[in-house]
Image 1 (cartoon, rainbow, N blue to C red):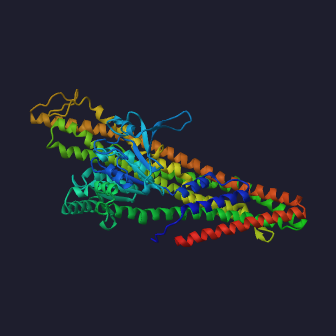
Image 2 (image 1 turned 60 degrees about the vertical axis):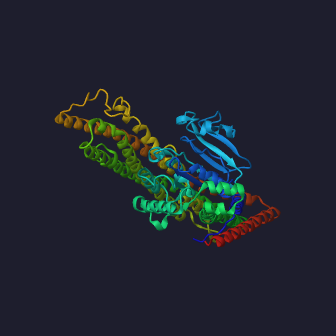
Image 3 (image 1 turned 30 degrees about the vertical axis):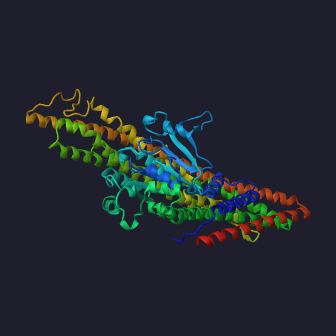
Length: 638
């Protein structure tokens, strides 16, 4: 990849000029999506999400990266299910954002002193997140945060695979890079982490690895730990070693180097290599993608603006009553053609889209059924597990194995839902792109007629350029696709599974303590020494556990099917809106052209000259912005 430094603020400024041109030429402001893109392009935000098990040095890693000791809680202060979002600010500032809303319908916010952070952001101060904290925003005057870097610190808890699934689905799809933290002292990457990383890899390939506490062991131990982890990542997680980006760091050396201005400590900490990689590899790639997309959006809008300017020039250069009457007649013909297309072909396209979406939904549900239905693949896995352990385990152990077994069931369900929702999202995007292409082709043929020696390009085709671009960017369905990735409503894996799984273990009855001889109260009484009785009791235990698993799988399948239906309904509704937007924009262009034609009839020669002068100024501005975009394209080599 050609890494270049691109000035995103300059790109955003060019976008603003395009928006101003669109308003001046079309008479209406740029769409809200484009206006929002101007802001986000200028900010050039880069989201670095940090994940890892407890006591691996994750929070110390973040503090050292920011060069601010104690910025987020470390040591025994375990973060709750909330997250810390660290971004640049002129001074250190903490703001708590809650899950509930204020009177204005926005998330409730509370600015707190540093001394109160533990009260909201640690397990000791906010056990089980009883205060319903969504996240804690942290501002800090750190150099690395200055140019749009946002660090998202996810909670470090024991059993990451069991607890972090909701965090993963909320933040991983939006991440520009994920740093997964392990250490040089305790155990290498374990089984739970392998499972977690496998699922994480299905969401994003932007995962990088950090091995902390490097200076607390000798160089040979560090090397062996790194080689061991690399082998696990390649053989167990399935990442080719050549694709793994792995950094060995020591946060204490970095903090001491910063405090004492000791270059040797800084170099030995490993952080200079990491920050160089972030600035020279990761962020330029992100900035390049942001700039490329912004330029493409500008080009689509400028094509529309150019066509509108051509149409306006055609109108103002009509120098006879005969030409003006011809314009009137042709605009009327285009208007009639649009009405015919709206009544006939547009409806057919929508019906075709809906049938395709229904078929896609049916395929997703069928696949989901094979996975989640009682007696399906996941149920068979649970049954095989119960059979495998029954020979060597006691009856109470079989009941006691339900909780860990159900965690594995939860993982399998999560993966199945992810695959189905991704398939639905991907198919929906392709169907929308096809809808835009078909509508564009039909409208171009229907509405493009010769108008004073040139096609009436601006009536239909220009609007469709923008709408097709919108479909291609897939941002039109951003709220739906985010939901299907777990961002909120829709196929939210954690929300579907969490509620269903949570009710399984209590169904078994009161499980008393964790000592030997744990009994399932009211189910089978006491263990009888007779081997035959034990065999029957084990069979009964297997059946009861499997029956409850199947029942819950049935509940999950019902919930998941409902969510897929909701997502499909939203997508179909969006497609209707999309087609209405096409028709609305074409009608708006027609109305504008008719208005300009009426205006032309009323202009005297002086007024006509003034309008031509304004038109020339707009054309010059369009040309200037085009040259500016071309310079960006040359810089990016796109």
